[in-house]
Length: 285
Image 1 (cartoon, rainbow, N blue to C red):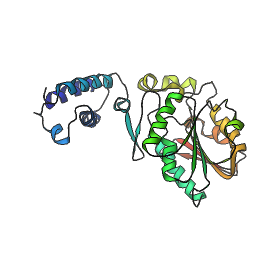
Image 2 (image 1 turned 120 degrees about the vertical axis):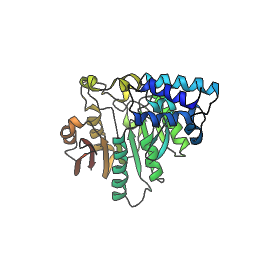
Image 3 (image 1 turned 180 degrees about the vertical axis):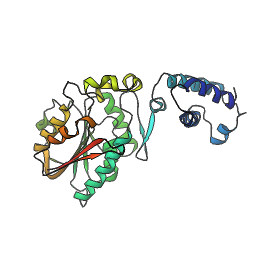
Image 4 (image 1 turned 135 degrees about the horizontal axis):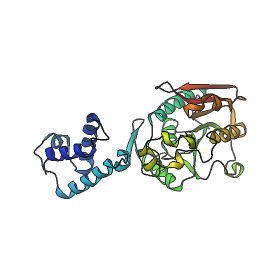
């Protein structure tokens, strides 16, 4: 089968769920990864790739047709200019979280002259993108990350090792964990993108996300969509140092309600994302 024929088949299989621009992008990255083709070969309509590799490519195409995120099929994604491993046990990083990282790095640099003695806690780490990026930007900081999912922590550990970042991963449920047993110190930074979709918002979520990404990382485990933020606010009162920062990604529907949880903090801000939705909270103790 020639490249021209493969392109036609690929387009026909996924044209109902992807635009022409997306199809062109996906064909390139799938051909590079699964057909071992370079750009010259991809552009050569008469080139005939290896038959065994073609079988793999066609299987991956069917996975794509099913709605499975292409990042999961590839096993990796780009985030904040870096490559990260992902699979079905972790969320695919969203653009809003890149915005959170930009805000976090800027604010941390504003309040800290250097990262020596800085302790950072990431709650609900998932694939580990947040702690890895913070550790790379603040290499002298000590970074801790908590997640309820052992399988997610396997990916997080893999990403930390790949990027040569030493991070303390903790397997526990933040909502029920015994903090005094786990932490003997206070933190200068607490950051989190916790599960914040309300259980009553199930119908608003795309089928691809519901079917292929871990619901435990998306939806609040109880009817109270703010339960993680309540717990984080209480935790920060005891375990955040004076002048320390809390940085959160939030549900746009509960901006003011979430902000109110930090009413006792010296400073607090509700910020919008690039789409104009209330998406982030920064609170300083």
